[in-house]
Image (cartoon, rainbow, N blue to C red; front, side, top):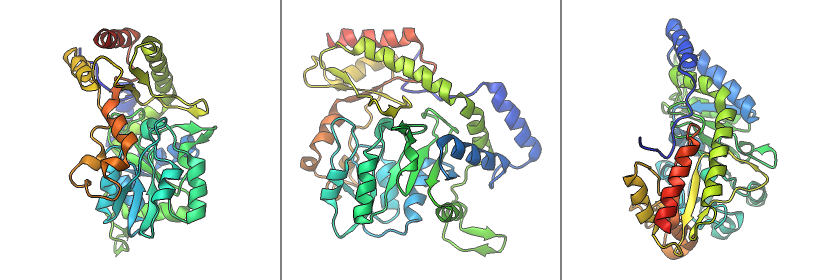
Length: 368
């Protein structure tokens, strides 16, 4: 049986079916229905944030987060992320400016961002890569110093805390992903976290065509609403998040125990003050390993184990970004090195111990 990179954290079928029956009986399938409203409230409480707006996917959430700020110019961001990060910038007629990442966290840093700020800079968009928090205090200080808006791509960071504080409490806006590959899922979906009721009201207008009432449209909006079926999946999944986190943590620890002494292989560090969500298990295959990363990737695939070179290539290497400010390879040496070494191994809540041990055995045999 193939072992995938991740599988959805799906609730028991009977939980989901019960909610589906209720939705079908109500005949309300979308347009800010009761389950949509209920999920917004429950997630805001769970994530310890004042305002949260559900969206049909995180890419649209990023688009709306930038749109609501009415920006013009450049947005400083990372080349080491899923391409939706930079796409959301281009779709808003903004220009991404790439800076290099930190070798330990794989995130951009306040220092690298500060050095890249010009008179064209309109905002900063860091990414909590693999759920590892950025230097949120450093970025908060930089925002106070420069006045530049701070929008976090928090697609990987559901339920992550740093020093006991929810990571999505930081920044002007944060965007979460609830895609089927994430620890918490609404199958597709996401959320925009806001600090003020005014920002939430604007996001809610933009995600529903700018419609105020039956005869009034006040914004050039789009359709980014989460429907009732997605909200149902989210409501059914939410009670199982902590159980899924625990099971992922057990698999993560087992990986580290069985892979820790293999020359040329090192897992991504987990930081002591972080309450992680264990969304991914990235390892680095360095030049000291007897087999290159791509060869190991192929061997695992031949054994029915689907790892992922995530993120490879860098966003800055795609043709639409090759000429963007900061995209030149010499400007991004750490990101380029990491992109050539990274491999995300399968990690999901139902991954059993025997499967982890089998994967580790194949890796050990391949790298020995």
